Image 1 (cartoon, rainbow, N blue to C red):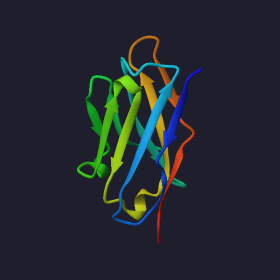
Image 2: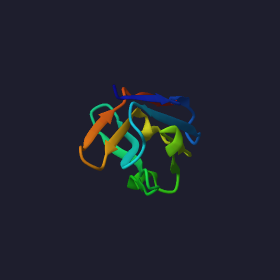
Image 3: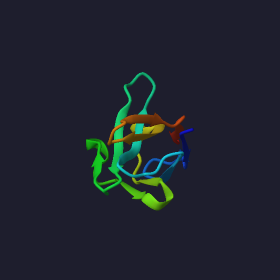
Length: 118
């Protein structure tokens, strides 16, 4: 059974940093991409960052230069370092695993809340 284990969300001050981790169980991080999407209340889910098992990252436009994604293939884990967080980035962050070779599959984590202190 495929499971995505997310960790690292929580409460942070504006301008602060958080590190999210996501490990996939039941699949190898090979021929795939893993990353993070976020969804704020009343808004659509959007890409934050993802990385392929070959090491190619993709970032959402709003996070470029502040967030860094890294993959550890042997641990089947990806890490997202988020710096200089803003209140607009308060959302539920969802880990995503997408197998890029056949059979294609997509899996989602349950989500972890990131809250910016007011």
